[in-house]
Amino acid sequence: DSGVTQTPKHLITATGQRVTLRCSPRSGDLSVYWYQQSLDQGLQFLIQYYNGEERAKGNILERFSAQQFPDLHSELNLSSLELGDSALYFCASSVSIGEQFFGPGTRLTVL
Amino acid sequence: TQLLEQSPQFLSIQEGENLTVYCNSSSVFSSLQWYRQEPGEGPVLLVTVVTGGEVKKLKRLTFQFGDARKDSSLHITAAQPGDTGLYLCAGPRTGNTGKLIFGQGTTLQVKP
Image 1 (cartoon, rainbow over the protein chains, first blue to last red):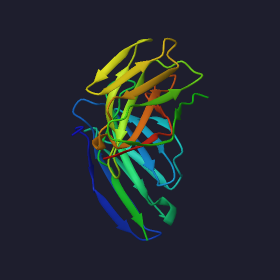
Image 2 (tube, rainbow over the protein chains, first blue to last red):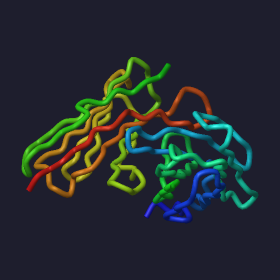
Image 3 (cartoon, helix red, strand yellow):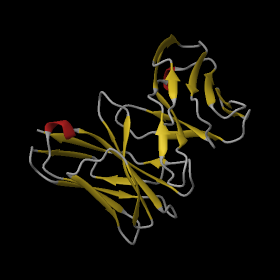
């Protein structure tokens, strides 16, 4: 158990819909990272938050957004969903540069 | 652009065999991490190597960081079916964001 929690574990929705994925980092970790992992691709970095502020952006679509709240939990919002958004979404947290601890992931299926 | 290249991409071996996975870059990294990921689950951090030439052992797994901190290797002795999974190396991108650069991964299958 990494100490990072993600909910829900599975999410099935339809094209055009909007969903919210939730992540609680390890106690004491200020940084939260979001990744997308599709079957045919490796881990794709989406976005990083540090203590409530956006720190780095990766290949995140404009339809996707995220935020980190004062209690340090983070949410990833995916809107106008397309079939190609079906993937595993991971959250990771860290206290120092280099080591990240990953949550169990949310499997999103868009039908 | 910092890149990490892993080889081989796929490895299928019999139980009891030894293997080595390589992670190479033309860039210097302040540290490198190795993760193992099982299907449908999140990557699990195995080890972090920080010092050039450093060797760390985790039971039957031996990790080495190159002297120039541009490469790393993972050696598994007497592989077991439980070692099956995706092995990822990663290193922090230059700068203070903490963003990790990941290799494309090595899929290991150990057959009983």
